[in-house]
Amino acid sequence: MNDGTAHRQAGGEADSARGSGPRDDAGYRRETDSMGAVDVPADRYWGAQTERALRHFDIGDDRMPLEVVRAFGVLKKAAAQVNVELDVLPAERAELIVRAADELIAGLLDAHFPLSVWQTGSGTQTNMNVNEVLANRAIELAGGEMGGKSPVHPNDDVNRSQSSNDAFPTAMNIAVAEAVTRRLLPAVRHLGAALDDKAEDWAEIVKIGRTHLQDAVPLTLGQELSGYVAMLEEDVRRLERTCGDLYPLALGGTAVGTGLNAPPRFAEAVAARIAELTGLPFTSAANKFAVTGAHDAMTAMSGALRTLAVSLFKIANDLRLLSCGPRAGLRELVIPANEPGSSIMPGKVNPTQCEALAMVCVQVMGLDAAVAFACASGHLELNVYRPLMVFDVMNEARLLTDACRSFTDYLVTGMRPDLERIEGYMERSLMLVTALTPAIGYDRAAEIAQKAYEEGLSLREAAVGGGYVTEAEFDRLIDLARMAHPHG
Image (tube, rainbow, N blue to C red; front, side):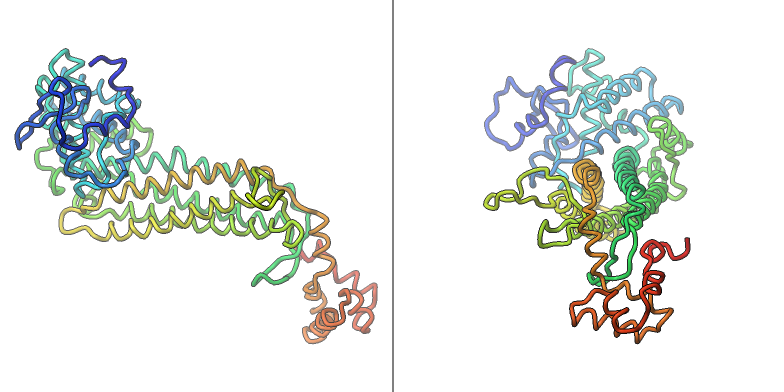
């Protein structure tokens, strides 16, 4: 196998090895593990344990996210480097592992990670998939024979000082922290900035407010949007705080948290190296028993993602309401016409970006429920729902990232106010009568509103005609700008 072809093959080709039908011996090599020999496709870097997992966990179409695989590449690189420093791994073997890990991190080995999410709850199959791929690639780099486990062994060398029980949660935390900090947070800030620009531009557009979906007192369109901006700013702060819970890592605790088979100082040194490689402030968890037996940090992160989804759900539905029409709805906002809205009604434009974002939010809320159940299901020294957790949390982050960017670019930046419609609602609103209450009292103000409604009068006609206030008093009290800014 050469560097230029095999590790760039499409990921889908990995599925060709699934099943146990007739095989062309020329296209396979013999790999072994503690249970015996297994035939593996000759053009794949994985080994016997991965091949067994392909056969035994042929469940659904969900694959372990590649972000998790690449996070494994980071931790395996860091572990190899620290193992050399601690004199438990020869430098020449470590260098081969590091070279292979760099290819993995760069995405050059993606086709060699075919495993289903639905595997053992500790993630052992994925950890071994990584160990085998890195070992065989390292052997190839050294000019050796793949499957021979020399000069690099998947367990003794690539997995040195580690267990699946501390490596998988470490990869989980790295993958999720990077997804949130590198991709999701910029997307949320992008949406917040676009809404803030609109809020500033529309700061002086006074419109009718609505509570209980009924007319209320005025505010400006800018004030209305500023509420959305503030919600997203708090979501960003919440996500940033919650990322802090992901930074303490389990690596170094090995099988049950005691650190058996890991050298002294390994945990602290490998966490520092991971922090150096990622640019994120990862540390060694003070109590490894907590981070192998439970995953409260993942629960908190999923909860923060759910809270963002709740915020976005409100924003999407508010903008959907404000843009409904064009002739028989509120139509205070005009949204971009991105595509035809109906296969039967010509000229129809639908709030498709609002609908897509709202569906994403509902999906995230559902995924969060699954994550909470999984995180609550740790038994004694190990939680065995880890692949589900990371798969769902990564899906939450990815969906919210993509939906925020789509919503921003294809709706928010192009929406505009319908000034004529907004002014018309203001002129007809009966709730402006609230500004008369301090001068004439609640009961008399209610009489004016009721009279205007029942007799089809404007508020001015009802108030002045009924002798409640003079024209001058009405004009002084019903000051729209002052009603929207009563203290400024």
